Length: 465
Ligand SMILES: [Zn+2]
Image (cartoon, rainbow, N blue to C red; front, side, top):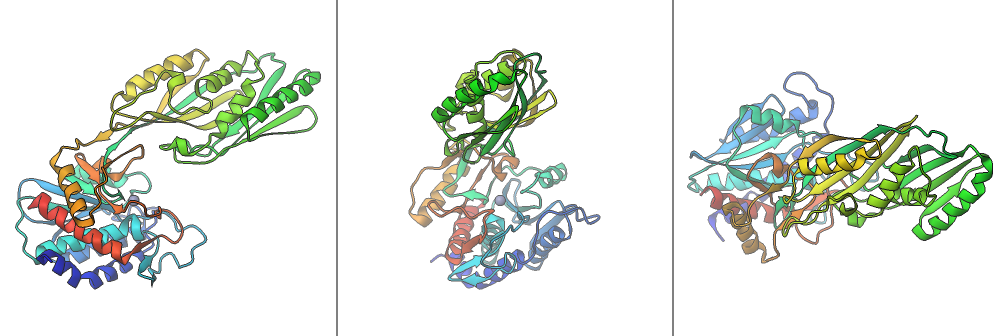
């Protein structure tokens, strides 16, 4: 056993105590509580707690007005950054263990933040302490940066990097092992426009579906009205037949109207293949009526160019990349208010296209049916060359300590690594473990916590040593 590992073994109890103390601060983002507490009193306390620990251990520290802070060790011109976050999502319902008590049972610490991201925070800090205690010589500085707003808007990093330089390279222990070196770009757009019904015999009185653009919608519905009531029965029959073919379509309604309900299955927009799109089903059903005028051309476009597909091929925006993977698209939300329509799309794209190219093609396509395309949010792809020293070192460290040789990951989601520059996500979730972040009964096992600390210590010693 190396000196560093002996040191880690000796401080394991202290690391667990420290993690319990962090979990016991319910650091959910709240309203600002004055200067130095832009995200509320609990986040101020969480940040002050880790910085006080750093000072007591003899590290240099800085608090950037309560938005973020860091603990730094070593000398050298270049810096290796480790980005962690101290905020947590709300506990939610249904816990077996109180979410902020940090109960230890069967070798696991339970609590909100145990794995996302306080467990890895404790592991990284005790890894750094082991390096310092052992006097490991470093040629680069190591800086552990604490964000306080990862779960909401990443404002913390915006404020932090206004006054502090970006480290030359780094990692964030806020996703999966072995490591994530490629994240697709994210482009969120809103399609908006006024589409009056005109004198169509069947009118779309209401349409609504989806909660958030980054979730595959599990429910959508539309209400049809008839200027000629004798049409209602034939429309109902057509929808019935189409619904049987599409599946998960229900018809309802009395009098002059007809309601169409579509159900699907929710999934994250970065993995639309795991879901079933209720809006896609709804527009396919509506399009079976083969109506024209008013909003019906737009419904046809949504049905024929998107429908239940998610590769963008119908919209002529399909793209692929040998490592980053294919473009994906999620028809996330639809709303109608008076004659105003709003549709939100969430696109995840590989580095073989640009956000501007995609926007251009979408604008061209939707202008035909009278809708404008507005960019809501855009984050370009994040990609670190797998041959880069950073990726090679982290992967080698992980493989040596776990014996697991699987390849690194390319994903469609976004990790905190994006804010660091040349950085990858590195742990803390091991392959095959169930996803616990943001769930009830979130926990980290003491065994995983200890192996994380060993992996991070060796990775830092190699990157900075
Ligand atoms: Zn996280």
